[in-house]
Image (cartoon, rainbow, N blue to C red):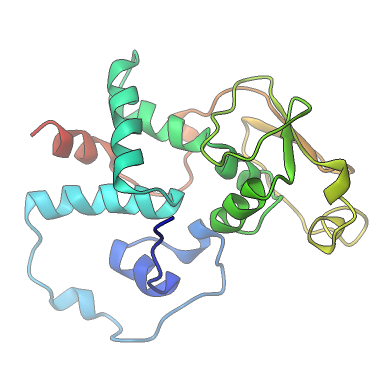
Length: 201
């Protein structure tokens, strides 16, 4: 599968997002500090394209899949841009990341692909699987003793702040989708209406 191998901090700086959004709280880059200040003003198209590239990078998806999400969002009731964000947040790899079962979405994507999770008791190894309200996501019984997951429970477990639409059992490797995500649940800056404008040309 194709993937972006550009350094995380460099890519985040180019797209104007914090590495913390990606789960890399300590990544920084000191190359060319303030360099963006001297660049010429971006065109309308460049600004719209950057917003699309930002979402693709954050959620780790490629162009064809992103276009498919946009097509689905445009056919749903409501505001297309907000529908798109909700679809991306509902991906299983994103939910695993939000529940604190993985430190980054990239890590979550790999863990899901390696069959470490179940949804409503059934094994799911598709990162793009869309969760629904009421779904229960658990680490598989056979994976719980691994060093990767055993450190997530107990007195020394890291503190996990889950979004309002998710609920995590702090004493078990299990989480539940209380409701579907809303626009207000998105915790990073993105102007999704620019993406809609880009696709409407």
